[in-house]
Length: 111
Image 1: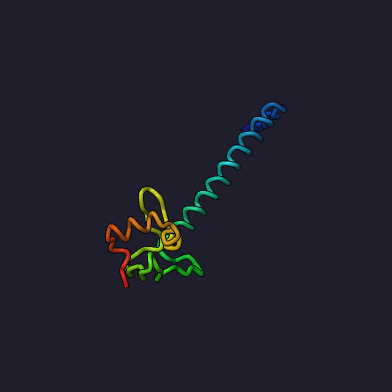
Image 2: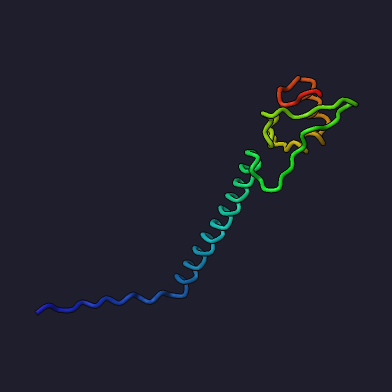
């Protein structure tokens, strides 16, 4: 005849329970941070591809009395000098805009 083997789990001590709880809390916090980072990255990606819902970008603007517009190939988010600028942010930043216009960027057309 075969003998039945029963194994019982050893009861956890309070110290082990606290350690497991701390580990779970740490993992939960990391997961929440990863989710937040993912959502931010997703939003940035959608903006850069012009897919953000309800986004109306600046296309025509004035600079020093002249009318300019963004070319059709200009992305919604423009990387410049290690920073990302929306079209509106670029128009609002006179120093950066001057570099684009003065440097005859193909992203900006004089009307």
